[in-house]
Amino acid sequence: MKRLILLGVAICMSCVLALAAPDKVSNCYGRVVDEQGEPLIGAMVTVPGTRIGTTTDIDGNFQLKAPVDAVIKVTYVGYTSDEKRARGNVGDIVLKPEVNTSMMWL
Image (tube, rainbow, N blue to C red; front, side, top):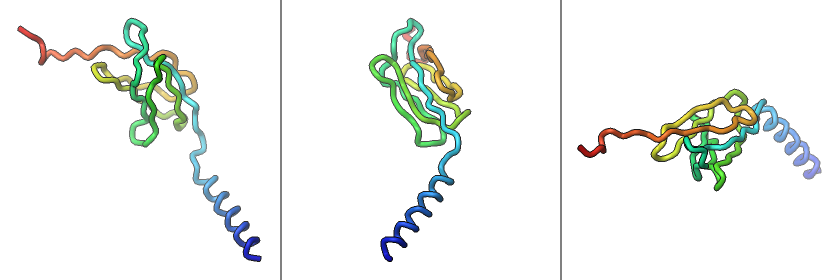
């Protein structure tokens, strides 16, 4: 009898958790490159305001699951960040070098 009750509770809990899960999630993927088309290894790809994120691999590719129509933000040290809509294949994301005029020599 205890097993039957535990089974019923487990089924109820799994139904509650399934209803609380996000409805629409998109498998978002793409590639992060610089202006010359070279892959940026280790670029951060995140969904701002969440704990969802990943880094690019050796070829600049990334893949993550994000809520549909969420914004993904791509950052890399020394480059300006960029934002795109999370929707399937976002293609190549080109980051431009950040110009820091405070460090220029006179």
